[in-house]
Image 1 (cartoon, rainbow, N blue to C red):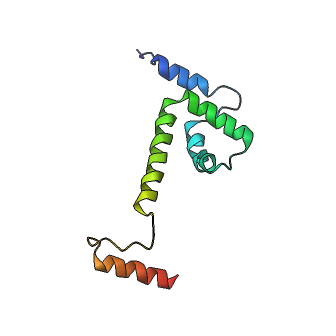
Image 2 (cartoon, rainbow, N blue to C red):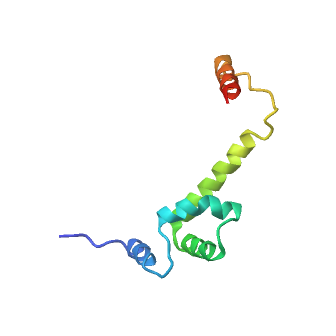
Image 3 (cartoon, rainbow, N blue to C red):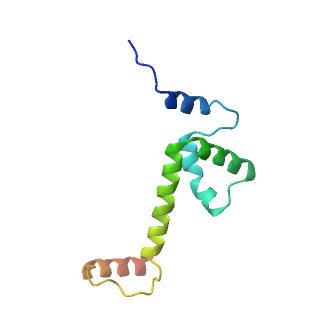
Length: 101
């Protein structure tokens, strides 16, 4: 005997049968273009429709945006001094790798 799918799962599955709808995987692949504004108009509309309908992708996008903000905040000024708790051998390895480029 199989157990019926919860209502939210049925709606989620039905959502992907709509014309031009994208999957969560495709949503993920388009995030960078969406955030930098380079997603073409029609794809942007489809992306936003998926975002409107899919709570998982709403949470994913919010976490993604928080990660970007935290990364930028951590490295506001690349000329800031290296924190004292960074091991010197790591600093030297990074500097050596930059010279090798």
